[in-house]
Length: 397
Image 1: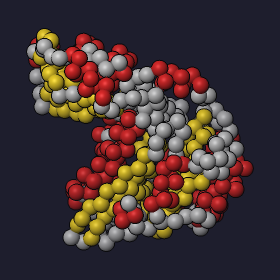
Image 2 (image 1 turned 135 degrees about the horizontal axis):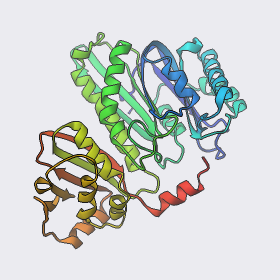
Image 3 (image 1 turned 180 degrees about the vertical axis):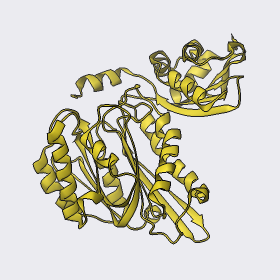
Image 4 (image 1 turned 180 degrees about the horizontal axis):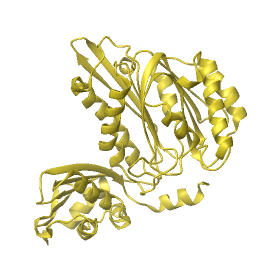
């Protein structure tokens, strides 16, 4: 993975004392050796955390040098004290990394409504700054430092070959529960050594987030801290790209974000299955997305998948109450590639064989084809298990 790390970035992930488990990283620091263009996409929840307010004021931006992330405490619903704590975190980071406070972005995730343990951060951030390294182990530590109820870290990398030289992209993310479109309880940080103006970076990120991070759901709950940041520091050999010149790069960037989004859905709290929903034949992408989202958030569909039950009735009825008009007689549905419903009536299939397929594979694929147009979308979710209830009943918010 080291040959895929974007040039000019250094990483550190440590335990500073926010989490009780001393073996778990709870502080991550990423520094660009040169000022980087920065973009951000944020939660649409009206109640948002102090770091979201801070970052919104600084993206798009042209001179970001550092991103600091803490996990275990969201610094949300903490009022003026939370805003002052966030600024202090940025100032400590700036001092430790030799830059201005205005060139630091902050992300937090974890328990809502509790003040940050600032002593942990006052000692932890300088410690992390002293451990900054440009290697794969340090990037992995950053990915782990974002985690809360996640069971696995989320990391993705790509490279793009161009006549002027190779461009590298790397991204990390966290997310497992309280996940829904328009950002969920997720954090994401994507870095590239490509040269981009900040407005171009912002346009790319917004468009790609709409097709990736806004196409996942676990439980339909949009939270307070949701942030995806994108840094481009121009340390490759490729010249600055205008929006019309980003084709291959944009495709690779979307693959990185798509990998991270899919990993979040697959790691849904208590989940045993990743569910991929493909919807096609709609009048518009908005129609396709609304149908897919409705199916993805249906507790009956999700529990049927937990039980390996090929219950086409739950899928069809969810499409029917999505609020999107369509001709039911032109609807076709498949499950793991097996047609189970077509042209308004059920199709005979081997229920036991299909159930076995669902039970024995981590991914379940639902396909719907309508007769309304040519638009299509892909959505990711997970099944709903008793463990989801247990995790969220036990997790203090």
